[in-house]
Length: 293
Image (cartoon, rainbow, N blue to C red):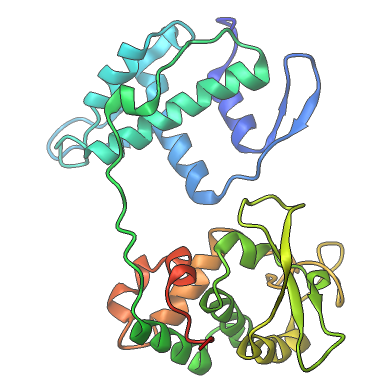
C-alpha cells in the first residue's frame, strides 16, 4: 500500500460494508454486526486504556505501529499483542490477545484481497499468538429447555408474540442465521394440518435453503399468534413476504438483536435468570428440543 493511504479510512469503509476496489469498482461488502465493528475498531484504531494510577494511553495497532503501518512484520504483531493489558495493568488473556491479532490479520487480508495490496505473507493466527482456548460447548439440559419454553409462553415484555416465536425457533433447532433469515415465502401453509418450511441453510448463504421439512406444531401456533401483530413495513417487508422476525421498522432482526431478545426472555425465569446473560441461541438450537418427542 502507498504510504499516503489512510488506514483508518480503509478500516471505516470496510466495516461500513462499502469500499472501492483497486480497479475502481465500488463494492457492497459484508454486513458486520455491531459487536464485531466495535471489537475491530477498538483493536485497530482506538483502544484506549486507563491503568489505575497511570497516564491513559492508546494501545491500538495503528497507534503502536505508527508510520510503519504498511511496512511491518509478523514479529511486530506478536510484540504488540504481547504488550496488551487490561484496565488494571495486567496482561490480557491469551484468548483476548489472539482475537486482537486476528482483527489485525483480517484487516490486512482485506487490503490484499480487495484493495490489491502487496501480500504481507502473514502466518496463521495460531502462529502469531497461539490458539484461542476452545469455548465450552455444553448443551442445555431438557429441564433448562423446558424452562425456556415456559418463559417464552409467559413473557410479557415488548412485543411478546415476536419474543415467543424467536425462542420457539431456537427450541425447534434453528441456528441464529436460520431464524433471522427465515422468510414468509419459505413457509408453506397449503396443508393446514401439516405446514412445512424450507429453512435457510446453515452455511449462512442467503440464497441457499435446506430441504422441505415439517414445522413442529408448537412453532405453527406461535407463528399464528405472531403474524397478526408482525410490524411489517415496506420496502423492507410486506404482509405476505420478507423476513418473519422483524423490528418495529419492518427490518429483519440482526445477529445482535436476536440473542438479546432470547436472553431477555430467559431472564424472566428463575431457573434461567442467573445464566441468561451468557445464553447462546446456537447452544439452544443444538440442545434436546422440548418441541419434539
